Length: 345
Image 1: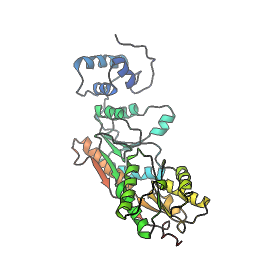
Image 2: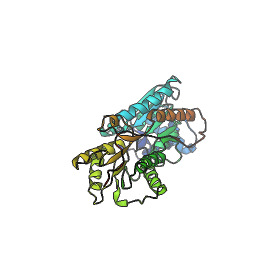
Image 3: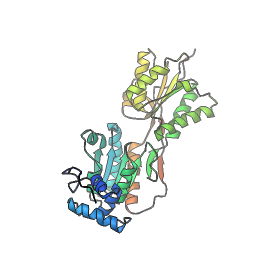
Image 4: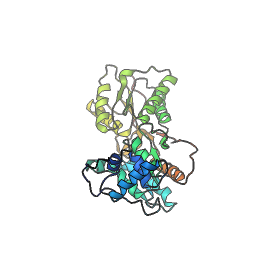
């Protein structure tokens, strides 16, 4: 017997219960319900009948329009505004060539309001999804796959199994940044990274280490700090490494916000940039030009990343098999006034 004691929740998707609740009532997974709802194969006949009965009882209908009428859906959460604009601009440039629209869902805002984002997205049935946020789970991927909606992740935080992704070459970017400091004569170089579980953070740290190893400069673990990509973490972690008895003469940062935090830490320690401390960021957000002095950083081509993700997801939607699982674009070192040779002792 099927337990129907769950409280009804009106106004969700196309019935009086969410897909998750229908799945619980039927004793199956959410992707299975999505497959039945969208008329896809891969579900046993008895299970399909059980799910279809529940869908009818709760007022669900298969989507009436053709798939893809909503264009490309972009999922973001907490991304810096200037970066988000560039990413969306690149996606829109590609979408416009196909007469497609681009929709943006702010996951953080919907979560803060206690709202679901996956079911409204399934209702819109976009041609494809570009996901640029850290909370994309295997369950989300299965639901979208069951609905026939392809997904491309943008610089994923963790390995998303078989999901195609687009990003920049974080390793080579960090390698170039560190080599630049080594070529200036720095040997006491601190590194502030992002979260240790973050794939891009690990790649940037590996690039940093590779540059030191190639130059036969010893790596000092006491000059490494890991945090999150924020101004506050950059400031606080830099204050720690700048208190080291043998203070570093340069700092490589995981992103530009951390690097701006290092600027503040240097100010608090009465250190001049670049006279006493050279600083390199990563991303090349617009704030780098406004910093005093303008910041040396590694530029990520955000508009090009968005365009590459859009081309890839549209290719998947057309049924093409991607020639490569991961698309990587080049990162470019942009040298400005925050780096200089170390002061003579």
